[in-house]
Length: 117
Image 1 (cartoon, rainbow, N blue to C red):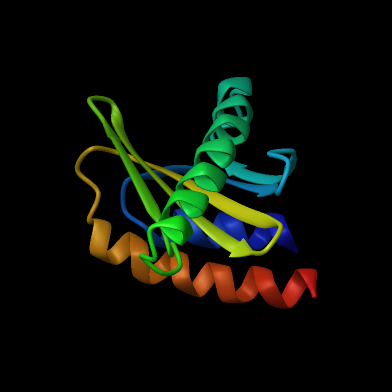
Image 2 (image 1 turned 135 degrees about the vertical axis):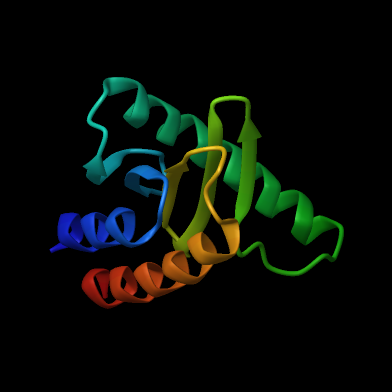
């Protein structure tokens, strides 16, 4: 079911190429789209960044982190916590509509939360 949620996410976000669901240690749980091994490696690496960003935001009193955008020449990566010990990473083309991606990502997060509870 987790893969279906991720497949739905990348099919509804124009320009999405892959989505990876990770645990709090950056370990791969599920994936849809591009199946390159680099996608899993990047997911683990980005999860470490998310933990650091959440810690910094908390120490500075900035509130909860809902998503982090990494923007590169080749595209964008949208990373969001799903629950305390999980996160999702969505790979997007540089021309993807980020507002649309955030709306669909929030929906996928709610579905993922139901599956892991």
